[in-house]
Length: 480
Image (tube, rainbow, N blue to C red):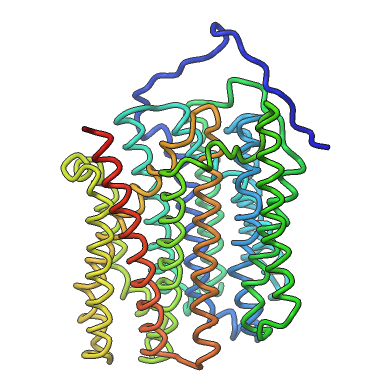
């Protein structure tokens, strides 16, 4: 028996119509959220060597510091989006960001690796409540060029946070500030960012679903169990040698997702509103956008994970030098992301294709440099490829977000934020897990590790390019 119910129709006079040209600065508090989350995720990957030294942590424990955030984040994102539809997106953003802030403080003060992992899990829960509210609020309160600018800012926030996490994480990881270990200072910065987000969030226009939204409890449980089992199996499978319990977890997770689809289809056919409406998930453009996002973020997560590890292990770089290696990448990503509106106006539907093409050229270029100039001077020789990679990925990030958001009806805006962020976070975690499994199985480190990460990203980028060409062709036909 499900708790969903038919949604009552609200009289037209009760629907509050918001301005369609909301200036982007009003979303600044909400936009800090994804940036803080991306910063926390990526800065932590840089601090793995320091956490290993500080706590004598095992490889599995280090993976849990990353996946302990990513798994609950991914499991609860769609529920977080629907709760925002039901109770108001400002309320859910404040609650989630508050938990994110408190857990960041707990991470900074963690006395053991176990406490750190537990705090990271709570941080993932907090992020799952606040993150989907960002895209949902943008979608529900703006249209046209204003929406494009806000979504571009959303992409810039996440991308800038990821790049800043690499740079500042690398700069702080091996240092001390006022006697405090640099990796702890990183979490203090995360807490300060969360505090700023909470303080500035009231500037954004308020929104919630115009109709009463009920929560599909059975669907939420099925989705949570399925994602949890699959993500856990992927996390522990490599270190466990893919023993039978991990295979059983994979199969059970897949079965839970199949049961979810059947259940959701039955609810929708009865006229009620499910957690994941199959009628929306069947939209071909949405499916292609989510597939492309999954491929892109898997490769993105793998590359940003291996670069600092590889240059530290293979070239003897300290964490600061490893972070500075990525500084131009971060700057270019930020500049191109914030300039995306005029770029998209010029390139139109081809923006995504151009972005993936630039990304592939950059990946091949970096691979060539790693073979020709692997040594202390790599920090200089790699810059042309990394600058091009930053530009290409900026041209991919926001258009992919737009491809997903524009397919979801405004009345279910929480679903768009939840779906996109779920795919993003699962894929980022999967990228780390996948490249970690390869290096663990092969024993590769240094140049071999970075080559493996970039080859993986290049293969996945070919898939993104194929999807981008299909989406571009479909958009071209639609404009005729």
